[in-house]
Image (cartoon, rainbow, N blue to C red; front, side, top):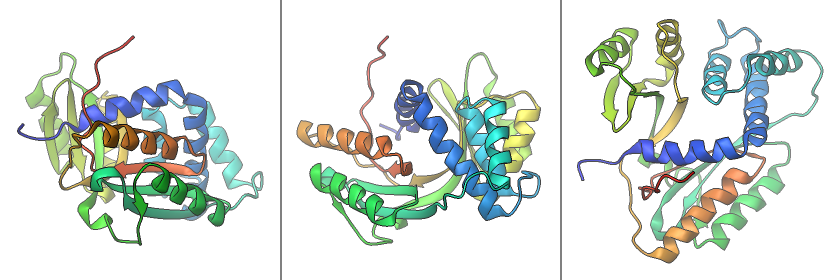
Length: 248
């Protein structure tokens, strides 16, 4: 194989999102609210974190009225809940590196839950920094290929300030530096491009495959449990996930 298809991971993630839209809306809503609070402004033009969160929300089909309502509520006194951003790192079955990003109003509850999931499915939670060195933060915009000309999309992406571009099966992947993500996304969106995924991600430098069926099952269940937890916002890992057959 010439390289790992990150799109296979995104497709599986998107399928789960489609099946649990209400939960995803709630998580993204929490992320938007924290971005308003931490960025000190409800204006995405001056709050880059909020701008990036809005891009993620739109890529996940969160309605504009929902986004506006959440921002308006967060900029007032409507929600007194204070969420804390905590990142956990650890290893899944077979030494798969896992980063878990959370927003929680109860640090003890969240730490206990995350540790329990790692222990239950044959992994272990490590110390801060134990796996993050294997990842780099990058903006990633994923665009369905459809009938688009690859050279034209690549040219538009690079002119907008993207750092890298690659065709991956039925999609184009546009990479940016984290600080450039918002501007690149805005410029390409203004040109009519719509993205199936738009987010600043933790992207691994290398991927690890699992061949043992029990480890594969446990790794998938670990990811499912983490992603199903209300406090967990994002789960990043370097598992080279097996392609799943298309099912209706």
